[in-house]
Length: 97
Image (cartoon, rainbow, N blue to C red; front, side):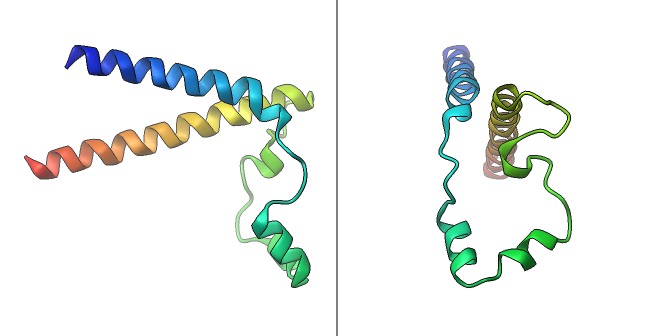
């Protein structure tokens, strides 16, 4: 059991390093959903939204440097996905008991 936890720590660290180093180099071209909204002319309506995103355009608003802003957003997004997945996994284990 201890070895499995150690492996997960290494996987999380690798994911965080990849997110920090590679996310600033992601393409600025629109993804599939953005492209469809542009073709259907509904992009303006989508920008109005109900709530604002904490990582709008994969950046954090209070960090002025684009590289660090995108890298930090990648790190926070990776941690959020990991925490959500870990929580779901723990709930499934509890239900199986």
